[in-house]
Image 1 (cartoon, rainbow, N blue to C red):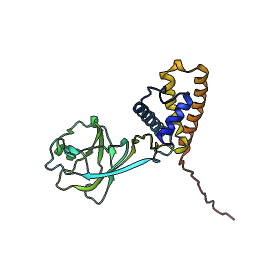
Image 2: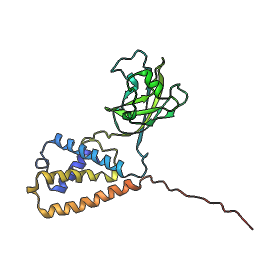
Image 3: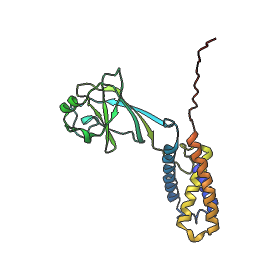
Image 4: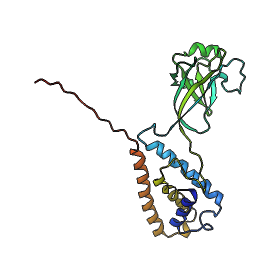
Length: 240
């Protein structure tokens, strides 16, 4: 459903029109629609069985720290997250462009040595067992690459991505088309909150009952979507 159809359904559910629905301002409606869209994406990530169902991947160069100054990408082994990253799930790094190794996620609070000095970082951490730490919307590769020469696509990342906003003429692509009506119910609920005096208790009760049904269908779908079906074949010895 494109945004305009989702908005129209929300107005039908609340028996309102473009003037009386919420603030009556188009920009406010799209802002709120994308807020509830984001919340539903978090619901999907929370309940889905296959945690790799919507994984995004990205690569970036592993940058030598030689000549870098604070603020440069790669300085102290620190890099910015991809712009649409919501939650990281896997990091790999290659120091030679040939072999990539999975990074272990660690908490630098447990490191009693320096997290700033290249020499100490190289002594503390090993390229054969790289690690990654997350801080201030960025990540730090340990050990950093302190010898000259960048490694093209030396960092590989897998992550859950943040959804892109949709508009009146586009659809919320990260939600199955048959379930996008849930956003209309989420938006309609905001109208009942904003203007309770304009709606009867009976209307709100009927709405809540229907919304519960829609939400159960939505969550049930993502709980079983792409669920693996595993079969075990056992060969028994023949003693005849």
